[in-house]
Picture (cartoon, rainbow, N blue to C red):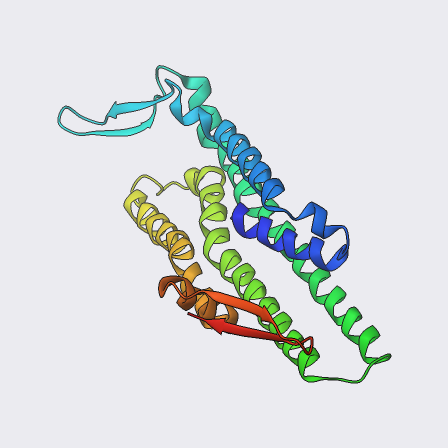
Length: 236
C-alpha cells in the first residue's frame, strides 16, 4: 500500500513541481525514502516479535499462534483493542488519503497544463502522444486506488467490528466459526490486491505492457542523432 502511495506522490510532485522534481525525484532519494518507510513499518510491526505473541493451547491436543492473553494481559488488550485501530490508520487510511489527494491534484495539474498549452500552441502529433501517455498514467493510478480501497478497507473495518461490536452479541461464541469464515474471505480479498497489481497495470497501461515486453525480451533502445537534428530510435 505504501509503495503505491509513494508512486502516486511521485507523480504528484512531477506534475506540481516539474522543474524542481528533477532534483527531488531521483533514484538516490527514492532509495532513501524506501529505506526510511521500511524501517518505520518494521518498527510499527515490531510488537509481533515480542513475547506477547506465542503458542497458546486451546485444549490438550491443539495449539495456535496468538497473543498470550493470560501471561501478558496488557499486550492482549493492546493487540485486540488498540492495534486494529493503528493497523487501519497506518496501512489503509493514510496510504489511501495520500493516493486520493495525489491523484486528484495530478489530474487537476495535467488538465490545467493542457488547457494552458492549447491556448498558446496548436496541437501536434507529439503533444497528442504525450496526452495519450498522461491519460494512460492517470487511468492506471486511479484504477490502483480503487482496487486498493475495495480490497483492503473491508477487512480492516471488519476487524474493528468484531472487537467492538460483534463480540458483545450473545450468540458470538456460537457463531464464532461464521465470523472467522467471513474474516478469511475478506483477508483473501486483501491478498488478491497484492496479486492483481501487475495485471491491473497491464490492462490499464499500454506503456507498461510495452516496457514489460521490452524488459523480458532483453530488448534495448538505442537513440542516435541525425545530421538534420532529428533522432532515430533503434531496437535490438
